[in-house]
Image 1 (cartoon, rainbow, N blue to C red):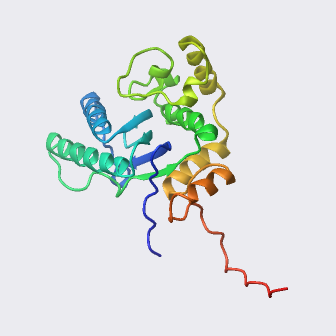
Image 2 (cartoon, helix red, strand yellow):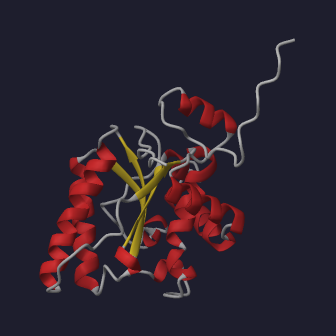
Length: 232
């Protein structure tokens, strides 16, 4: 079966996942992490991308971004990924593929899934056993949204602004979201849709998106198609 083209729609948030080839380590120390963040800042700005959340794990990374054009996300990921691979191979005296093929991504309905996706991304180091508190992980967006540091890479989405009328209120509300965590069902949906490229949102959201693209947005139901009923 032919592989579907990536789904990229301007002005909608996208959850992006990029893994190391064969799940190999792609960030070995602070210098590697810093290099990727520098490249992320350069290429997101160059390609008109608003970055709302990120986490760099040792063998993969997640992004939550909103592109301003259809070409913005693929251009950013291609140029950033290529530049980092060249840097990594040179620094660590290696050759060959660094990334596990093309990046995976999907479009999210902001009102329902943007904050859960931010929460999922920032809690990744806790789930991975790297830290006990999400804010303690240096290579994520978490500390910024809790007001513990300022990260120039990040841009607030309207859904984050809606958490409160003051910075303190927003930070406290986001801390509460992190403390509550996510259901396994929500976590599964966030990962599954990103890896397979299916849009994530309500039926109304999917229907509205479908008017903007010819690309299929939902997975087909298993089994043979039903035969059309005879006209009445």
